[in-house]
Length: 454
Length: 135
Image (tube, rainbow over all chains, first blue to last red; front, side, top):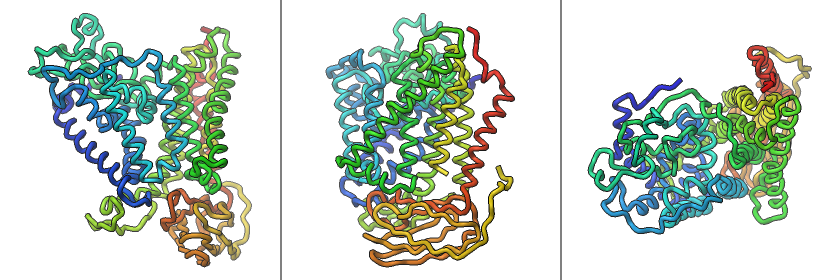
C-alpha cells in the first residue's frame, strides 16, 4: 500500500526545485557553524551554551522523536555537514558546472563498503558521550572534526563517502529509516533497465546542464533502480531531478515496510545491537539515580572509566549478541528446515530495529521534556555571556509534562515490543525458525528498559 | 492498568530524610516513603550549591555548600518520582537525579503486566506468531 506524494504537483515542484533545499541548507549550515562557535567561545556551562543545548537537546529531540520515525533519512537531506565538501567536489552549488574540478575522485575501498566503520564511530561517540554531551568545547571539536573530515573525504573520494561510511549518526538513521513511512523508489523498474545513460546514478551529461533535468549522480552511491530499502538512500532528491523518464516517486507507505525483507548483513545486525544496548546504558547512566555510574562514565582515562568502558563494550558486543544468538539457536531447534545460524541471526536481528527505535524514543522523551526549558534561555543568551536577545534569558528551568512522561514511555515501549514481535514473525518466515525465543529476548529487554525508566 | 493493586497500606507518619548532595549524586539516591506520609527532606550540600526539584509534586529546595535546607511535603501521590538538581552545579548537572518511591512502584508493575498481557493478546489474536514453518 503506497501513496505517491510526488503526484501532488506542489510537492513535486517543491522537491524538484533546488532553491527550497538550498535555503534549508544555508539555515542549517549557519546554525551548525554558530553551534561550533558557541561551543568554542561560549560558557563552559553546558546547559547555558547554545552548542550543547541546540545540538543535544533541540536537534536530538527533532531527530529521534520526529525526523527518524516519520521521515527516515529526512535529516540527511538537510544535514549541513557534507555540504561544503560536496560543493567543492562538484565545483558548484546549484547546477552542474561546465567543467568538473579535478580532485582525486577515488573509489571507496571495497573492503570498507559496509557500516562497520560507522559502528565504530558511533561506539566511540557513545563511550565518550558523558563528556561530549556536557562539555561545550568537546562538542564543538567533535562537530568541527566531522565537518572537516567530510570536506577532506569529498576531495579524495567520489560522492558522499563520509555520510555513507563514517558518519556516526548516519549509520543509525539508516537502520531506523527502514521503519519510516516514507521512501524514494522507482515507479517502473523496466524503465530503468532500458535507460541507457542512467543519469540518476551517473549525473546528467554536460549538454543537459542548462535543462530542467540537470543534476548530479546519486551522492549516496545508490542506483535508484535497485532500491529496495531505505537504509542507504539519503532522500536528497537528486534522482527525482535527473530522471529523464519521470520514473522516480516519493511515496508515503506503512511504517516498517522495509523490515518485511530481513537483513543478511552482520554489520547491520551489529548496528541494531549497538543502538539497543546504548539506549539501555544511556537510560541507566543519564536518567538513573546512580551517581557512581555517572562519574565513572564522565571520568575519562581513570580506572573507573575503564571499567565502565569495558562493561559498556561487553554489554553491547558480547552479552546482547550472545543472548540473542542463544535465542535464535533455540528458535532453530524447533525448525525442521536447515538454515545457517549466521543467516538466521542476521535476519532475526531485523526485529530489533523497532525495539531499538522505541527504546531511543522512550529515553529521549525523558531527556528532552526535563531539559527542554534550557532551549528558551539559551536562545536569548547563546554564549552564556549575559545577553538577553529575546528577553528569555532568565526563564527558569522547569521540567515539562512530567505527569504524562511515564504513561507515554510505557506506551512507546510496549508498542515497540508488539512491533518487534510482528517483525520477528516476518523475519522468522524468511529463515524458517521460531520467532518465540526472539520475542522472549525482546520482552526481557523491554522489561529491563521499563525498570530503568519508570 | 488503572485498577487498584492489592498493596498493603501503612498508616501515614512524619518522616525526616537526610539527603546529601554532591557533584553529581544524591545520597541516598533512592528514597522510600508511604502514601500519605508527611515527608521532610533535609538537603545537605557537601561541595557547591545544589538543589532538589521533585517531579510530580513541583516542589523544590536549594542548599548552599555546608548548609542544610529543608523541604516538607505530603506524599499524597503514589508512584515513583525523580528528583533533580535545579541549580547548575557542573558538567553533569542535568543528569544529577534521584528517585523517591511513594509506596510500591505500582506503575512499573502495571507496565510489566501490560507488556505480558499485550503479548498474550497478540498471540491469541494472531496465533501464527508462535508457529514454525515447515519450509
